[in-house]
Each structure stands twice: as structure tokens, then as C-alpha cells.
Image (tube, rainbow, N blue to C red; front, top):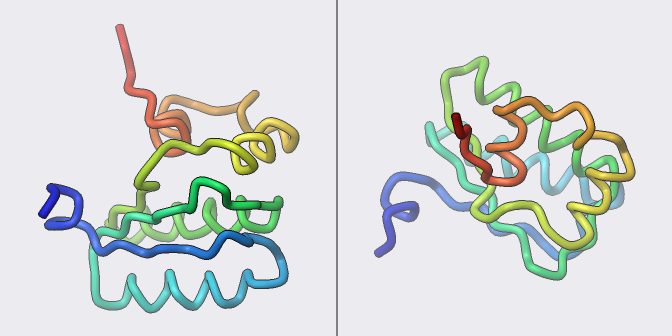
Length: 109
């Protein structure tokens, strides 16, 4: 068993991550947070995301922080998700915490 599996409840999401299934993804995340303090989201490599998915993840991330829970992506954003982050202007305003969450970049001095 890997380290992340021991300490994080894992959520595997479908390939289509859009407004059409946002309520399903939201319900999945909320259900897991009821019983767990640490959630890791697994995204398929070929996932197709839209802006609604980014908003949903950002909302879940902020809610987790407010409740003292941990919410992470199991792998850095790539492919479609990375492109949506770029097109929406998210990456231009990333702070260090955002870079760590979305891109898994650690702070370097």
C-alpha cells in the first residue's frame, strides 16, 4: 500500500469533467469529506475539463481549508486541465499555495 493510500481517502473522477456532471462530482467530494479529513483526487490522464470543474475544485479546496481538512490532487494538473488553467488566467495569478496544489511545485528559496 502506498503512503498516500494510507492517509488519504482517494476519489477517482471520470474522464469528462464538465458542467454536465458537476453535480455528480460535487456529491462524490462532499460524501467523502463527511467521513474523512484528507482527500486525494485522482484524475484520468486523458480527462477533459472545463471551467466549471476548476471552479468546483477551487471551491472544495477552500471549504476543506476552512474546515481544517486536506484536499489534494494525486498528480499535477496536465493535459486538458492544464490548458483550462492557462486559458482561464489562473496560472497568471497563482501564489505558492496554488502552485503546490495544482502543479505540485514546492517552494524553493
